[in-house]
Length: 109
Image 1: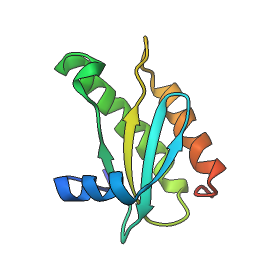
Image 2: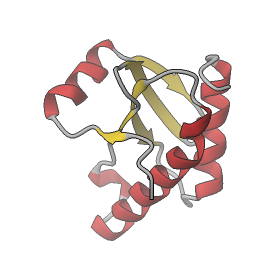
Image 3: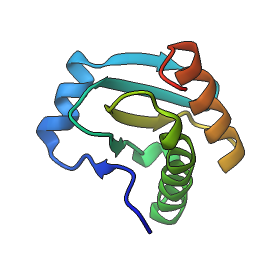
């Protein structure tokens, strides 16, 4: 498929977002973002979210939620998505949270 965004991989880039990025809070997610040259996504899913299988599932859901939301972004930003702990992790909840938070900030078309 066509790649909508690049992946945030370097520890340095994550650190930058954690120190300088703006924080958004929504029911299912905490979102960090800052201006960037291109749309970039990093995920931060810690051990407290469960074993690797569960964490990988959460990451897949987050990437998919982001993939659906990304085309509506008005300008290139670097994002780090951090899921909140929950009983159930669902794509719908992640996507809704992401869209609401970004819309609130005026980042979505």
